[in-house]
Image (cartoon, rainbow over the protein chains, first blue to last red):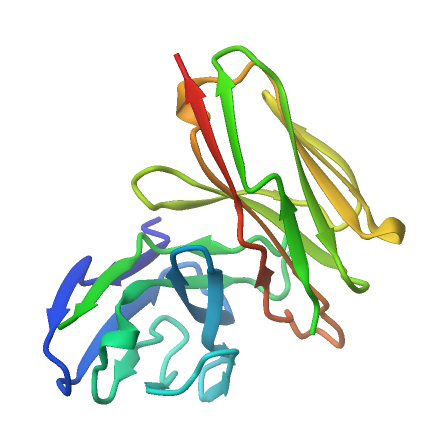
Length: 114
Length: 112
């Protein structure tokens, strides 16, 4: 099993550019989410999805967009990049129906906006 | 919303020492997980432990849900234990997972 795969691992954007961070999981998990990690802030939830076609906002959704057309994929779109979006982004998935609701995280995308 | 506080924020150990990390949370939860983020940034799930005690090798965890805290024990620490340890909690209901809320972590450095 590949688990949760995130691409790219590193990205530099100019202010105002848009891009999509990719996230795919092969565990047939219903639940997927995006977090950002900033120094001293822990991980903060951006958006999440409880199944294909269903998405909702987390704690810090502004400037980001998501969609969930399949169970496997949950891309995160930056609409117009800003320096405040410089961060490390993690995608996670989990099975709602497993007795162990442990999350599996991707390896992260380090994004720098200049 | 639920608040999660972890202590200590930083911890330096000599290899072979034992340590206890603490996680306090402000409200009732039925999902609590401990994660280790290694120096390369990878987040690894250590325990799913909404209550009770679990052990995995040199690591063990105890959650006392009624008193709203969890403890992570690391025995005979090794340099590979270095990194940041996160506690995360949620309240799920009606089949809904609930979104994990993370503490700010405890940064552990194990010196050889």
